[in-house]
Length: 392
Length: 141
Image 1 (cartoon, chains in turn red, purple):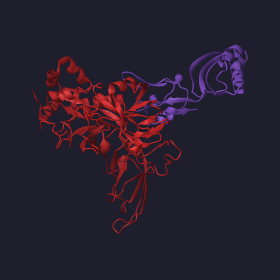
Image 2 (cartoon, one colour):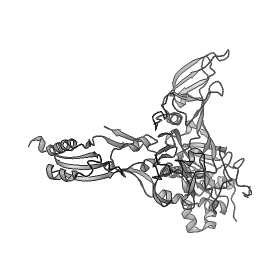
Image 3 (cartoon, rainbow over the protein chains, first blue to last red):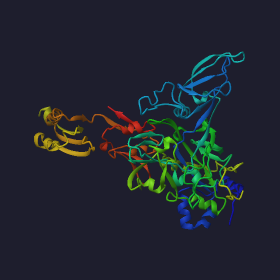
Image 4 (cartoon, each protein chain N blue to C red):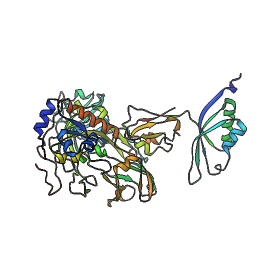
């Protein structure tokens, strides 16, 4: 079997000679030319996803003030940020609510603005109100600060998200007899609708299901800029059930990611409000997959029809902590607009944007083709299925 | 020609209760007011409450008289001066709205899965405004 190294692929990228295709284009190439010939021809396959990723946030450094301040509590546009870090560092989480938000006191709450929106507004270059308070120390005497700032006034601003880019994801349905408002959207009673959230055949971790090429240090597209994989995300689970083709049949792998917000584009990172649930962040991520050998090419040929996602009851079982899975459907069925499930024809709607996922995979393809984006060999690969030989 | 003879082409939502569901309302609009109705959408719930989204064309005088008559019969009449609009630039193309839209005004083009909004099918139920994560749907008055 012919093999390519990271060094060989990067040399071709630098010369502008690398063959780079998206995770959808590669499917047709392999069908027409066969796996062996396609593996020899294609150097890099680009993936993309743009969906709600709650476990996201950003570290911000405000520069030292004059006189100096040990910020104890920090708010941006009235959204609290965690300041128990150092003098002028804070962490703004995507799901943080605005102070005084009525939340679900009048159910379902609207959650118009929160941490996710602060992150989007910073990246968009908008002006934000900073408010900070402190108890004052001999070295940091200032006790109160209020100022208007943009991202240009920050010393540092980088995304540091503990869990993004779920490999596969639950499909939401509601078995209760009343409407529920969830992070999977509004779910009508008695299985009245289905919401799903996956980039399917474009999804980064479904194109490398055993994480043969993704790990600490993998250079990625993050929010319109360049980011890196820090390692496995929280709740990364490589031990769950898989299809005969090796695809996980549930959430499974996740990524912890980081990237410089000053170089991001607010088109690819958006604060969102979920009725009755809260605020969150839609994040655009694209991971380039090096075609190291024929096996890798075959993995990237995954299609929506191969991917099984678990249909979960968010009406009764999920909230109680009972196993919510009712069965499985393919992403191809979900994308068709309706699925036949449990004897019912149920209309479907996505939460994750397919057009944007495609745009991200295409943008990353352009970056790599133009020679401006090199592939990095991970320092450590993500944990994989026990006994699976990755040929490291 | 008096203003009353101006021709109008309007959209209205008629909401009716279970007592009114059996009434031949559309027939009445034609017969008594010489209006041309165009039923865009109609729905009756299991409790027999319902709504009718109608296009009505005819003279302005007849249109006004018809609305008064319908209200006197106990129908709730909402003329569609309120409109839902879609801000394409704010839209993230996620498609979640298409799952709550009852009239098919918001739908996904296939296979591209791009969000489309056909304003003329909208019944101004405001569900999309509530559900859109990116605040891309707005009520214009």
